[in-house]
Image (cartoon, rainbow, N blue to C red; front, side, top):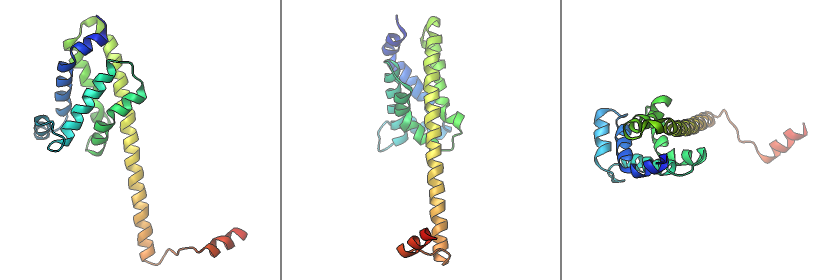
Length: 171
């Protein structure tokens, strides 16, 4: 049987184990809360994590690109990017798929499955770095605004009039 067919056939066990492995990357008390309820209002992080895992798993049973993987991983990676995860910890949940695959798949399919997991991990890392870059830019922009406002309050910054701008161009 082809790998993608086996993945489709074992979708439930894969998703259940992958979700559990993902929430286990959190501290014990947090993991208990995340695993309890999949209601988006009572447990938004748990619900988003479950939905993302289901979406990514659906993608890998079809043909996919790095771009579509990044888009599918986006919700959970955004959450992990603003939490206290290092880059390696933020994407480590992807690698738990390899262990799950070893327990469910035949040995002949492990190599092919590991390549898919590596592609998912690379997409997750790319998305994580993009999120961190966005966070850095937001913080830098906010710092600039704060400094500018402080200078304005102190009278150290003057607004330039249109005439000032025109006369400075002629010089």
